[in-house]
Image (cartoon, rainbow, N blue to C red; front, side, top):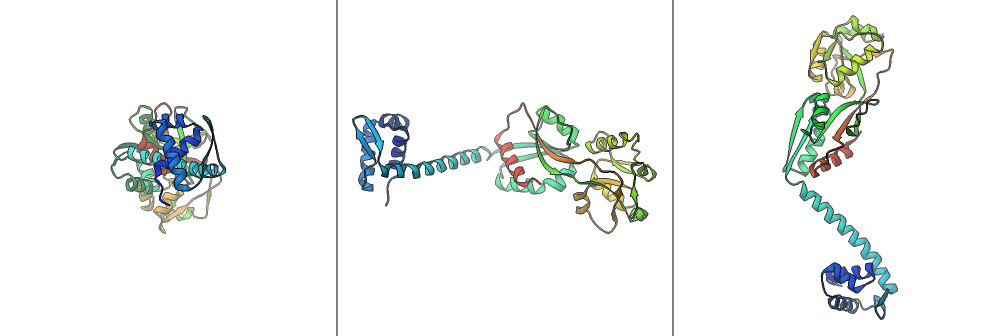
Length: 297
C-alpha cells in the first residue's frame, strides 16, 4: 500500500481535533481540501474512518485504530525533528570550559573526544586552572561551565551541580620511604616526613589544610607544585609523601609507589560539573552535559 504521507497527516489532525475546520486552520488549507483528502484516504484504504452527523464527526472503529498508530508515529516524528533541530543548533559555535590539568587529563579526555566526534565544528576552549578560579569565571560568565573538586558539605547557591566522579583520595609515597609500607600513620605523623603539596589557594590544598586544622595541626609542605602529576613524579623520585585520588595513582602506577595506611578516614569529595544558575545554557553546553551524564561514575 503506497499512500501519500500528507493524507495521513490530514487524517491525524482531523481526528485529533474532531473537526475538519480546525484541522484546515492548523494545516493552512481549505476545509474543502481537508474533506477531499479524507475521502481519498478512505477510498485508498477501502474503509470508512469517520461517522458523519451533520457537522459533527466521530471515529469509526477502524478510524480509532488508525489514529492510535498514527499518534505514536507522529510523536516519534516530532521527537526526531526536535533532535535534528538541536543537532543543527550545535553544528557551529564554541564552548568555554574550565578544569584543572589533573581533571582534564585523568577524567575528561574520553568526554572531550566523544564531543569532538559528534560536533566537530564546535570549538572547545578549555582553560586549565585551579577549581577556585574556575568557580569565579563561571560566576562572571567567562566560562559556560566548569569542573571542580567539590566538598560534599560545601554547596554554593550560585551554581547548579552535576556530580560526575566520586574521588578516593589517599596519601602515598615511594620505595625511598618503604619503612612506611607496613605502618599505619596518624595525622600528626605526616609532619615527620617531607610532604609535597599543591600550591596554596587550590581546592585540594584548602581541603588538606582544613583536615589538619580540625586536629589543631598545620600542614607544612616542603615542596609546592601546581600539578598533581608533578607531585607523583617527585614522590617517585624520593622527595617524600604526596596526596591524590587513587585513579591518578593507578594511571601512574609502577613498583615505586606505596599507598599509606592511616588511622583516620579522609572525607569524600567529588568532581562536579557546575553551571551558573542565572545564565541560560546554550545548545553546545546542553549537548556537552548530555555526554557527561552518560559518563558519570
